[in-house]
Length: 115
Image 1 (cartoon, rainbow, N blue to C red):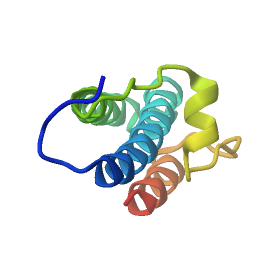
Image 2: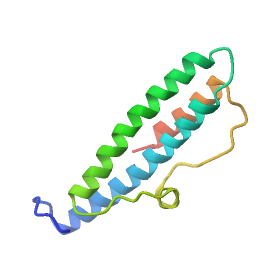
Image 3: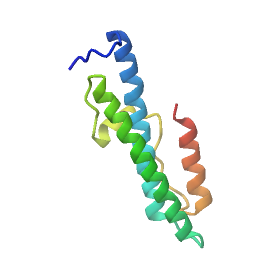
């Protein structure tokens, strides 16, 4: 599909590359936030469990909008973990601790890395 939306082909491809990278980063961040939601430990478990749930729900909205924009400019949005891992700038690392300071610190670093 090559939509007639007033964007040149070169610009459409440049935009698509940025959106694909953003989609991959947001999806990896979503997955890492789900991990925090599922595996948080400590005295603040309940409040942090709810906090991380709010975060991943908001990320889901962003992911959907980015994927729909990719489709609107004429490309297919990737939908596999392997494709996201190949396109992301974020890293996966095993958690040493599952308390809120450690999880928040890691997720904050990821949020700040996303363009």
